Image (cartoon, rainbow, N blue to C red; front, side, top):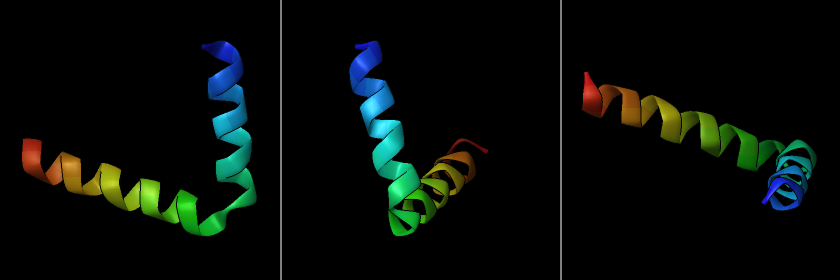
Length: 34
């Protein structure tokens, strides 16, 4: 699992768009739980 998470982190770092999407999703979740 640790290896998978590390690989996923690398993908996010290599994909600014994916990172932005992740941040947006986190923001939306925060709004839903607020």
